[in-house]
Length: 335
Image (cartoon, rainbow, N blue to C red; front, side):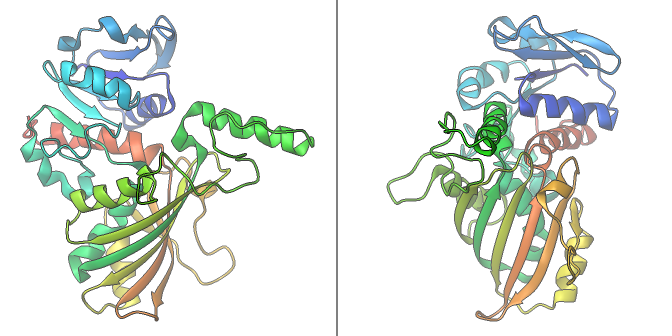
């Protein structure tokens, strides 16, 4: 099978390559595609160097699947053109709320792949992806009414330039020098910024609204969700403090068993020093880690969780590749 990765030189594109190599999938030709400034570069994959092709002139009829990992503007301009020739799996936010485009986390709602109308499948927001994979087994058992989530998101979610800026600002701060922010609204080094993406009229940011709307689309439209999204000076992995209210009674033993037995989840929950997962430990791991599992005794059927996952993997590259695997396993039943 011939595959293309659009945005192959960026964070998510390179991580997609890593996932493909790690899984050892049998590929025909792999085409790495990027903007004109990256065209001609060579990227090493499975023992050989692949020359990056220019997106503007790339012939998508040569491939069966195209992973788009280059941002919303590129997807807006090129994804539907590509979808005339191949199946597009898009990592951007551009198509996520399109009613004719399924928004997929394979472990949660792979059945929606039966309804691919535009030959495009959307990958959810990185924070949403790790959230719904932990919510799914609990919702199936106890029915979620309401969620309050606060996120603590790494700078890698904002791209490579933001990762580089964190390193630069940290050095400047340690040297006692002035910091001028380029990719953030305020200094990110040794700071926390409660602002990701643009503000809407009601005071929520676009990132917060994505979490609400995408969770409803993927899991259940009846779920109420409110979010506060915060950027932290962490390179990779997003963390989430999640408060859930269920319709039904539960026990903590039932919660832990349901999570541990669900594909993609791993419970690390010891009530001792260090008996929980942190962003550093989640980096480079495929699983979504769930810790600090405890009852919220201020509301009926309330639960608190701490969820951590590598945003570049679970929230982007790994989820996209798992979508492709699901389609291949089912002989492209969504196409």
